[in-house]
Image 1 (cartoon, rainbow, N blue to C red):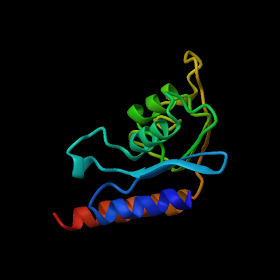
Image 2: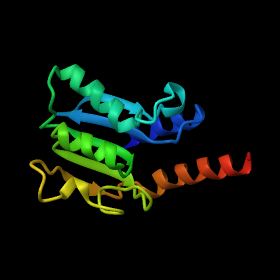
Image 3: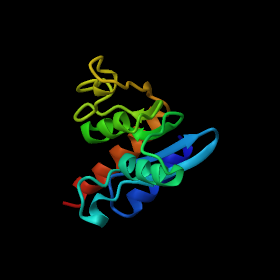
Length: 145
């Protein structure tokens, strides 16, 4: 989670929403990214998606059944769907997202019994640090308006 937080801080410096994600398998980092929606002018360029893309390219497969993703924020619907489709075995996230979270806050897409893959989910790891980074970012944005 420390690596994901480092990436989230880098996103904040670039005026991106500070979310970071890292995909690891057997101790090896397969992919890592932070949000790049502003830079790319692409609302789908979330940290989780970009980290998954890197990891899939690195392993040369379309699935990551032995991988764990660490993300600083509970995934949105898009990212939760990608985690399911990539068959990531485990998701560990920091802050809960009461507005868009799809790992239990708004809806629990990741553990929906109708899906053919349901990753193990652990939420709240370093939640305070992850949440504070987001709060400070949005407070500074509001203060600048």
